Length: 392
Image (cartoon, rainbow, N blue to C red):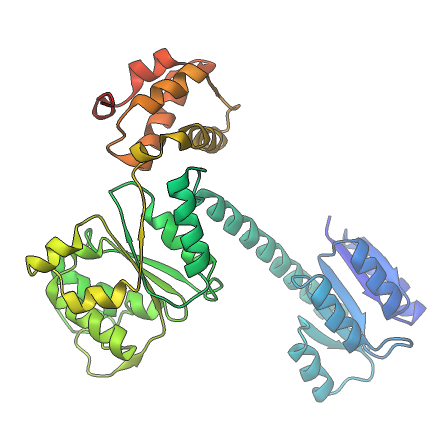
């Protein structure tokens, strides 16, 4: 049941609103002045707050400012019998969800409360989803090599420096990129990912810079590219070593001038993005073979972060196994499966050529094919053939 707080110095207004809102199946708390209302806000979580403007002890605008600090996501609807355009505008500027004049139009009030409640629910759902996404992109492990990566991310994240992340496939380069974004001043803006290896060379420029209608045969309408979509946020160029030389030259220009031009267009568009790139290639060899521009490499590699392969941090396997087991069991909505010590020992013997990506798949397979617990025998039976080569 949604909970509403009514702050108004007129007893008749409070009682009328309580009667109407409780009839509409809302839970209602009442306050006769701003100070009492703030005490209730400190103690309780509300879905919507109704607040009068002209009150003794504390003005409603002051109450609004303090409420937005205490419960920033709670919609506040201001009500007043002395309202005018200036008052309404000031209320909205200070963070009010809406402004309604007395005498109250009850139909409008109920609709406004419903809309405000929907907004409050949406904000909470967004928070939960962000927390879930954030949990899915944790860097799990306490090894010295991963700790070094984590420390580098913490130091570099808050800056605007461009970062090149290197490492084998499946080591978790995207996790590092996302952590850099979450620790930056851009975290409230978009994190846009482009897999340069997955997009055909003839389409990569359209993907990055967008295109105008009629730019090529299938361009039926104007389309914004990833640079524009990431404006104000972070653009993650995954597997940048596979990008065509033509696209590389345009990316270089975008980084030099902070401008892009859509395919088929002639208008410069200002963009403000932070570039984080990743590759599994040896960039020195790519530059030597004239497959990657050296000037672009220097532009994107202000900071270099190398993510170690799993075989070089096997001490993280117990933590990773626990993390993925909990995550996968939660996804499957089954009770957690125990992993025995001998199973961990067997997992630590494997080479993990596919790194963390392969490790998670194996854990999922073991959860499905094992019984109540995962044993060393299960690991020997069900681990992927590519992982069965013993460490030398």
